[in-house]
Length: 265
Image (cartoon, rainbow, N blue to C red):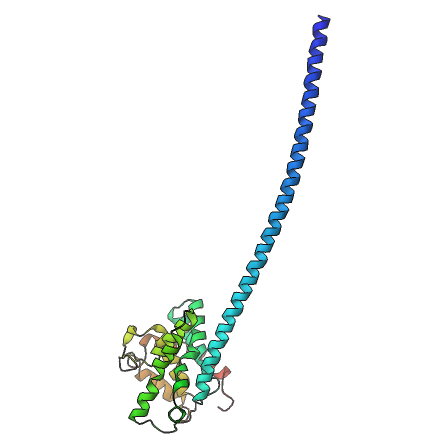
């Protein structure tokens, strides 16, 4: 009986020793695995951080490219206006008016902002019009008017070669901002909603600023005279909905005009 008990104790002691060796090995393996995982996590974190840094660089470069495009577009528009001796802040005011119209019409903020950036290019085709016609102080004769009217097609041809969204939009603006709601505009006599909303918006923004500004061939109109002609041209020259937006939000348009007045006004 004593021998049996001693043998049992011996077996238990062997089992205990084996268990201790096994658990010790497991502990070492787990610790080693922890170190491997820690190094892997650190490497993965470093790789992630590097990837984020590169993403940030790409985003910054993309923003720089977009800002440069916007600056180039605005500068080109300003050059076109300066050749025809338009008022200094004309393109800035048209840009702001266009965004106000776009937002109240229902365009999304991003699209409205892009239209603001594109609208200064509406008369870019004028850079190809001879100075003798462009800056003529009196009325055009029939041939001069035909030449002047080509600036819409010329502007479209200049801009439509690009695949950049802002220049595609500017091409539409240049092409259609002289079309009229009743179909009597140019270059294609489009009518109503056949005219792209970008063209309809820029048309009204441009005319509002042009009428209220002194030009080489005319004095600035009074607000009363402008408002009268807008009411008369609702559904004729201009989109009725845009005319309604203009009068419903008149304070916004007048505020832009006041803040961006030309020093010569």
